[in-house]
Image (cartoon, rainbow, N blue to C red; front, top):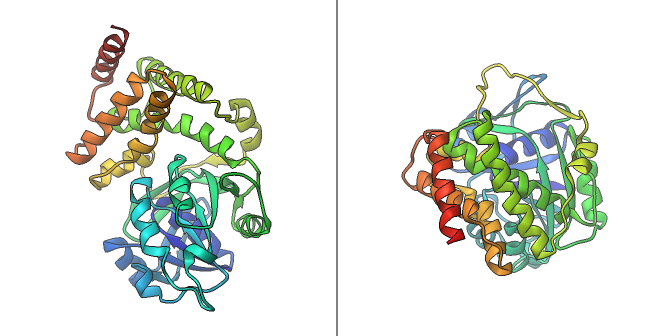
Length: 339
């Protein structure tokens, strides 16, 4: 199988790089300065065993790649806010022997949240979800890093909306030869919703910096309690913290990497890069949506969704809001809801 990594940033670059290192055929899809650096110098992957330089082919879109192959696997690794444009671009591309990508090829959504695979299923017949447990960073154009050892990450994989098949098992086998654990599960959504609850921290971190002090931790607990209340009201199952700890164990231990400063998660990185967009609409915003559908107030997640979006549009510095200011606004939001 050939893996076409649509969005070769932090997650896509690391997954594509590790697959290529293990001898699998990979094509990266990237834009702008990142595309140019990958084309001119190869993918530089910083991992605990050192920096790897991998001459992986790169294109800037489907037109540059041309006709797809019947055994291609499309791996969607863009941020959720960019999903629809990617689906529209890649779905109609012809596949050798007849048909289109949307009709014939598997699409693997390696992204945060749960919305992308729902969007994908409107266009693609074969959609797979991944719960991405992969601490990684986009360092600079052409350079990504992953600090986990002995495994780079754990990628629970399954069909969307549920089930498993031979394609999932073949993809998992390739991943497991490439420094990942890739359990194939019939209920991948359970893992993704648990990850969604964990990802509610992303907006807090993007706004105020690392969640370190008790004041910030207490706020995060309140935010996540809103999330669990919403999932219960919606009847959505998710894996427990105990189940997640048992699955992860000490398989992905983070170590310092030379030339890779300590940075925040994906939302923090979006602000730091000044992309102008952020995924809070599909993390905190997913909780807000479910709360509105099921009659559960979500003032804290609504506040975080709004503030993170404002920070992104105004290209404000990540971590520039004092924790006390965010807590004050959170208390005011809750008070207004209680009136």
